[in-house]
Length: 219
Image (tube, rainbow, N blue to C red; front, side, top):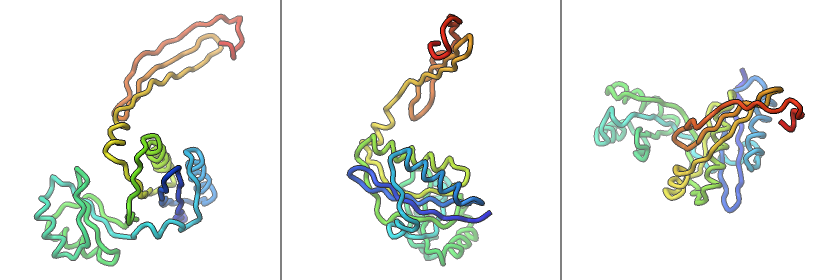
């Protein structure tokens, strides 16, 4: 396999959101085409390779579950290990940031002091986050990132977008009903579900027998 890093950006109405996609592939053209399709489908536009790197810092990151160690104890360890920063905003994990050169040193120090680490690696960390105040645009960006992450060639997706608490509440409260139709030559099957951000709820399904005298398109 050939490791291919592709950097792309998206522009939306009234805001600019940068996205970095890291992919590993044996067919660069296939991967680029897949990424391009995702951006085009969800209203984004592609920038040239490396066009948004300047908006991010290349850092080492170590994640640690919050129920494994107290914040005070971890702070003492990372200060002694010369880590650069500790992020506590995630409700479940601490995020320890280091320079790339110091990542292995900090990781080894924590390991020697029996601090259980969930993950360590090198990331693209946004210098500033762009707040999206429109629920429709926020949903569009979320769908784009999910679509990219679902691609088999994509390893990591990084972005500098952020969502306000008000928009997050709006997104959490939506629901829609989805009707699926399977037209057959004699019977038509259907299924109806209600989708929310938390779960999909089954409503009903069944089969309808339609007059064979009608064409398939009419049925």
